[in-house]
Amino acid sequence: MFEQTFKNIDDTLRLVCSNELDYVEQSSWILFLKYLHDLEYEKRLHAELGATPYKPIITGEFCWDKWAAPKDASGTPDKKNALTGEDLLDFVNRELFPYLRKFRQTAASPDTIEYKIGEVFGELKNKITDGASLRDMLWDIDALRFQTSEEKHEMSHLYESRIQRMGNAGRNGGEYYTPRPLIRTIIEVVKPEIGKTVYDGACGSAGFLCEAFSYLNERVHSSDDRETLQKRTLYGREKKELPYIIGMMNMILHGVEAPNIQHTNTLAINLADVQEGDKYDFILANPPFGGKERPEIQQNSTIKTGETAYLFLEHFIKHLRAGGRAGVVIKNTFLSNTDTASVALRRKLLEECNLFAVLDLPGGVFTGAGVKTVVLFFEKGMPTDKVWYYQLGLDRNLGKTNPLNEGDLADFVALQPEQKSSDKSWTIDVATLDETCDLSVKNPNKVEEEDNRTPEDIAAEIELLNTDSNRLLNEILELL
Image (cartoon, rainbow, N blue to C red; front, side, top):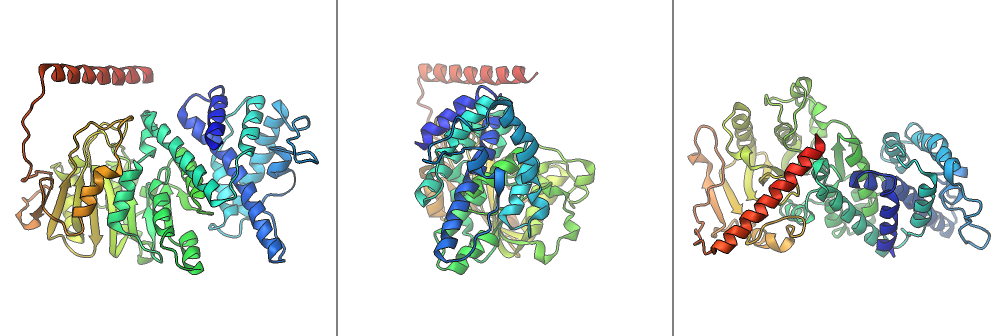
């Protein structure tokens, strides 16, 4: 039922929105309000069972079953008297959104669901300008249920698939989505723990935080563990409005009632002001690469560069607590670039942290990004002596229809704990590095394979490359 409902919603949104990014954003705020309605229903039942009063979060005409999906006495959708057309749009834009925005000022504290409601609707705008279409969406979403663990799991899975499609849509959508098999592998290596903090300062759609929650949720052994995981474990920051909203919704659908995500520019934090209480035990991140920051933001770092990914990496090194572990994705050119900033940042990483593993990823892992990346695994508090490398070589090209899967990473996960050597893995001694601390990937164990392709195979590959080139050219022309 859920999949058909989402299909209906997308069909409606195609009439009023221009792209996949808007589909996700506009369906998110409606899903959020339906989720809150079901959450309130669940909390009210628990209160009644315990013979305690329940104070609702959303009241009066702003309750879901008053404006979005009113029912008649028999519980049937009251389509005759439900708001629609301009009346519905006026209510949403002039009354509902202003009401929800005020929650940020009236909430008891920032770690409450009330405060998060105010934050989300302080950033959102309703872009659905056709009241009839909005009415159709409301009836569709009202049919969804968020009351059992199975329903919530299915909903979170479907929402993840929407985020993936948004990433696959290319352009700036791709920066919001890190393949989940890669995230789960990074978490498996970093091994976060309940009772300690997990941080992503460039959290996008919150994929790392959602997967960390799922990983830790399987390790909950008490009600204290559960409360700690809910309120004092997962932290994130996100600069851009759309991924911030989607990240909040994604965490909520995964079971985090009041996500600790801030809508702010992480790099505006001056690293000279960072205190011990500002640090985290585990850092999981895929910061944006290729971006540039303003000169006044660059002044917050000791590494003089405008490259966003480099500024984030220093931010993560500074914010990692002694003994803490991190897994950070970065462009592979970081390992060998000879500019002053690259050399200084590599030296800082090697001197302040133990870079215990580097996972070299093939091209195509990130849809639409067109860059090769590596994952840096490091522990704060001791200098690096040796670095273990793993070069992920696959016998196929990765892409939208053939993405990275967890089976591709199984050998890396198996070899990493003991850092064994193989035809894909090896270890270097930091003492042998040159003055630039060049960490580039040079596999000494790689067996060169004989090229057995026929002329027909080569011609087919050339044709495929030409097709990809033409597609990229057309996308560029669309942007001009």
